[in-house]
Length: 224
Image 1 (cartoon, rainbow, N blue to C red):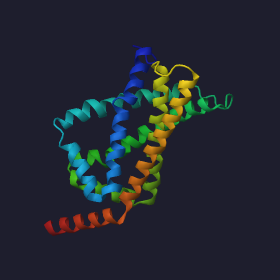
Image 2: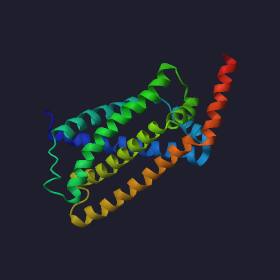
Image 3: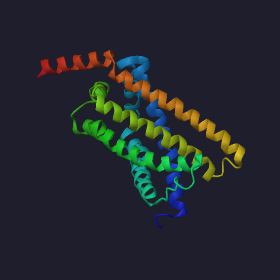
């Protein structure tokens, strides 16, 4: 199987939507619970996910391995693609270029985010009950807040535009009219998901999560 084979491209495209696109939507909704329900609402959402049976294997086979394949092969595509926006400056050509650029940004962001959150849980440095306060500590840093903003917007664009390309390449939207309609729908998905993530980031910076973080610090100090 060559690095640029038909099968590899199709698998890369499919994994970007199922399961990774679905995971991104779930992640947006879970994080939005921080805005809608505060620390308690966010923690309830997190607990509901971690209470799923065989959660380790679900994450391994439906999140981490697909991310690894999609990300590594996506980097290969990004650095071997011919970005010719200087010659052909039409909308779809720019979208193709941004798809490659946001793919690189998203992959780097996911690795960084996993290190800050998921890896720290596995190392025992934080518990799942402290994820909200950990996110508060991260985004309370102005530089990290900006980087997270860039990361989530890049991820949402990459998924939304990739969904449009998936519909075309898999023969679901055939013809200019269907592709124009799907383009508008995917843009709507981009706007909605971007808003959910942005509101979540502001929620994590809010006073409720700051108070929760201070309370946990106080309890930890007394137990120590």
